[in-house]
Image (cartoon, rainbow, N blue to C red; front, side, top):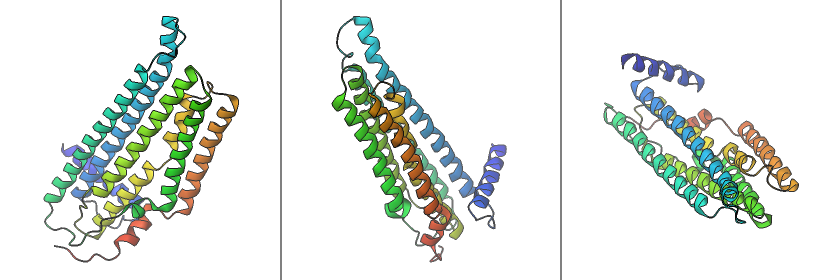
Length: 272
């Protein structure tokens, strides 16, 4: 346990240096919160991998069922229902894990001898900003449009794959909304200006990560590329490339999370 605490403190010091706060020593509060955040990010990646796996299984189960039965249908609604139930389960598990992160924050805050008297409570515009919000909305709309177009023109296997894609896109969108809601509702835990700035930085970085187009851009390529007509394959590839280019452009043109956090925090109004 002690070695793990030392490793967390060292990791917190590295994080502070990377965000321009290296003049301040790492504290147990920051080390605890960063460790919980790291576990949450790892767990979120695992949940996304499970989503891809379940969606891919639902996509291929239709043709497999058709081949096994010899019937003309695409395999029935069972795989789609299982996918929908799985996404609801994944969202519930993510919600429970976010509740654990909030509990860690509350416990860390309860141990503080002093806390910021008037902490900053950022809104969604502060965390995402219009460029990232526009990127997230555009990516979701584009992925949904690809699924809807495949559903409109497809038949049989392609049609079921399009339904799977649409359900997966909605699931990813719901997950991003829930994550943003969690970041907005999570209490601010800070004992001084540095820890308050670090709190806001973590929120901004997590919000921007939820707006990244990587997952929604990859889903059409994984689930439908090669099964759809040529024009659809080209559209999916263009959508992926444009999403990456837009993400890079927004990242370059938008101030970094540390700069935004310093602007939001300003001078602390006092400690208690």
